[in-house]
Structures are given as C-alpha cells and as structure tokens.
Length: 270
Image (cartoon, rainbow, N blue to C red; front, side, top):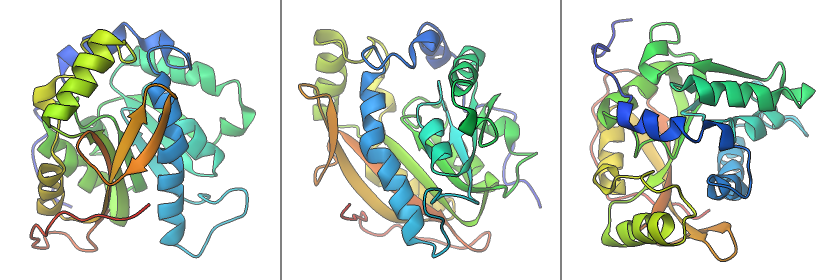
C-alpha cells in the first residue's frame, strides 16, 4: 500500500511536551490536576462502549469489547486505556512522553487482568504508521486534537492505521469565546482545575472544521455530541451545546480514495 503522505514532519508539539513533562507523575491523583479527565470517563467510556456495541452483534457478557484492537493515542498515564482494557479490548496506548508511559506501565501493574490486554509504547502516531497499516479496529484520541502540531496530518495517520470501517473517537475543545473564558480564564487561571498553560485557545478546534478534516480524509462522521463539565460537582454530562467540549465518532470508509463532501454538522443524541 502506498503511503498517502510524508512523515518527515511531526504531529508532536515540543512546547506541549514540556507542559506535560512536569505533570507526568500526577495522572492517577483523582483529586489533582487531572481530576476532570478521571470524571470524564463516566461519559466517554460508555459512549465508546455503547457505540461499538451498536455496530456489532458479536460481544461477550462481561467482556463486551473482546476481540477489538484499540489504539489510545496520547494515552498519558492510561486513564482511558485501562477501563477499555477491562471491557475486554486489546489496547495499545501510545504517548510521545516517556515519563507518561512509565506512569501508565506502573499503574497497570497493579491489575493482573490488564497484563495481557493493555500495552504501552513511547511513540508518536506517525512513528507507528509504517508498522501498523490498517491494524486497529478503533482509535481513541481524547483531549489530544487541541495539542497536536498538525491536525490534518494527525487525522491522515489515524486513517492509515485504522482498518476499513474502523471507528475513530475524538473528544476536544471548541474554539469559541465561551471556551476561552471557561476553559482557560476560569478553569486554569481562577479556580485551577486545569494546570495553567495547559491549553492554547488558538489550537482549539471548531466541530465544523474537524468534521471537514475527517470527511476530506475519507471518514464518515456519525455523531457530534456536546459535553459539559460542572466544576462544582466535578462531573460531566451530555448537552445540546457544543460551545465548549464535544465528542465525535467517525467511521473510516470501506475503500481508499473515495470522494467525500461536507454535510451539515451531524448530531446524535446520546
């Protein structure tokens, strides 16, 4: 299979790496800097699980995702990889920061069930494209799109490592005035539920832009759902509004090189 693009450039932003280097040991502190990501599992894990179950009739009770190979891109300390592994999936978590992978491996060791189901690798997405062409049934990229250096290249890499008709799940932050006020000014600078400097508003991604990038790369967007974080309760919920956070489910086309067009923004009630 011919490669669709050159990987001489990188999706990894060195400035972003430096930010997360300082927090690599704090991933599993549920009351610490990553508390919002811990509670996000309450809605993102069921969203991934139920979407995949609705697409297949073959699943085992207790291990509903058994038989699926999932790539968790930008896995951090393994906050999403572990619950997906416990649902029966074979999960590969990749992160360019070696300290994150060390943290993930250490935490995984506490649960023998995860030993054979979850593996971690210090790598960027484009670095595994060559060895992983059409390898994975599912890719999850949760809170990653707003940190990559080249989003279009990132999505093309996702397309290359996904099997035809494979699923891509993305959660990210919209680029609005409200997301700037709530996501940066309040969350980072005032109440400190997110480490200051975590986000750059210029890198936030409007859902319309993300949908266009996905469809121009051969994906069919199946759902775009708004997400809302309540800092008072520390909990997430689904919402009609996509003005701050949102989740996307897209499916890779069966064949390569199919033409696509951008439809009005897709929504799906979850």
